[in-house]
Image (cartoon, rainbow, N blue to C red; front, side):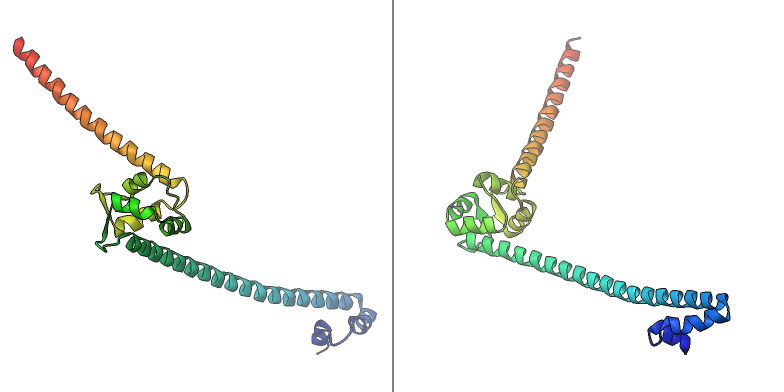
Length: 194
C-alpha cells in the first residue's frame, strides 16, 4: 500500500525513502528505481492512449475528406450536366458547333465555365477537343468526360496539341502507305520493261 501511495502521490517520497535508506542503501535505491519505473510506465500508458485517440481522429478526418471529395466530384458532374442541358435549348441531347458558339456568347454560360474551372479562349478548338468521335456534335457523355479532362488552365491547349499531333500522325501514315503503294507500282512497271 505504501508503494502504491508513493507512486500515485498519496504519500511523500521522503517519508518512505528516509527510513528505507536508514535500514540499508540498497533498499532506498530499489525504492527510487521502483517509483521511477512505475511513473514511466504510467506516462507511457497515458501517452499511448492519447496517440491512439489522435490516430483514430486522423483516420476519421481522412474518411471525412474522402467523403467530401466524392461529394464535390458528384456536385461537379451534376453542374456539368446542368450546363450541358442549359446549352442544349431543344433538349436533343446533342450540341452542334454553331449551337455551342451561340450559347457561349451568353454571359451566364461563360461564367458557368469559369466557375467550373474551364478556361475557354477558342470555342471552336474547345468543341473539337470535346468531339471525340468527330461527329460534329457532342453528346452529354462527351461533354462531361471532356470537361473533366480539360479542367484547369493549360490543359485545353495541351489536349488540342495532342489531338493535332495524333491527326498529323494518321495523315503521315496514310501518306506513307500511299507512297509505298506508288513505289510498289513503279517497281512492277520497271520490271515489266526489263
